[in-house]
Amino acid sequence: MSLRLKDRVAVVTGGSRGIGREVALAFAKEGAKVCVNYLSSKEKAKEVIQEIELMGGEAIMIKADVSNRQEVERMFEEVMNKFSKIDILVNNAGIFYHGSVFNFDEEKLDAMWRVNVKGAIYCIHEAVKHMIKRRYGKIINISSTAAIGTASPETTLYAITKAAIITLTRRLAFELGEYGINVNAIAPSFVLTNMNIRGRGVEEIQQIIEKRKAVASLKRVTEPIDIANAAVFLASDESSLITGQVIVIDGGRIDYLTHSV
Ligand SMILES: NC(=O)c1ccc[n+]([C@@H]2O[C@H](COP(=O)([O-])OP(=O)(O)OC[C@H]3O[C@@H](n4cnc5c(N)ncnc54)[C@H](OP(=O)(O)O)[C@@H]3O)[C@@H](O)[C@H]2O)c1
Image (cartoon, rainbow, N blue to C red; front, side, top):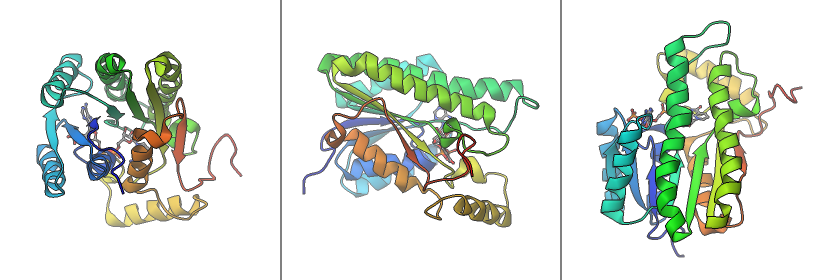
């Protein structure tokens, strides 16, 4: 069977850990050359590169803060110098802080907008320059079910950054379609990554897992590989006529504010 992303070049932001790591590995398994972007987890990024090399793939790691425009420009220059093209961009780097409009930390609110929204825009700006020239590109933005309306408390301010990502996806699909660029989003529900487990004890995590299972029709929590599998599909030519869409990966959660029981 032929590899689904053979010789494609992919940039995965926040590829050092969690969902991004799984996406980078899945892309490499399907034959893509991968740029694993990271910010602070250098050792973890190295491990991803080593795993890719062990499977016979090719990858580079680039440290860049996606919320810093100059660093993003430099990252894309480095990718072009190394691989001469960019076929796939996954805007995965993201941060989450609890907070509601009644109680929030201004700096954390700004940081979420800078990383989750402006970071994606900066990366798209750089990637699209090269994609337009070749009239080919796949952009995959990682949103969240928070944006669709899951009923988790204290997530509203994060949710609106992820809602912005959905609007960005839909609008760009119109703007970039004529250049052969597909723009889609994935909206995962709760995934067990550092984003959710940091600062929590084993018992509390287990309780959260049970709670999430209970509100999922399929009675299991979302795993990074569930997101990676969808990302491979959206990055491949199997999805060539799909654009402007949001794939919700939540096991059929029933606790949506908009249509809850
Ligand atoms: N986990 C969930 O429940 C969930 C649900 C829905 C959507 N999502 C979304 O999925 C994406 C990945 O989340 P995750 O759960 O895998 O989170 P995670 O385990 O906390 O990993 C976050 C990744 O983003 C990178 N990152 C953070 N800030 C960055 C910056 N300024 N510049 C470059 N990289 C940066 C981190 O890099 P370093 O470690 O190298 O600093 C890390 O690789 C995020 O966009 C998140 O909003 C997550």
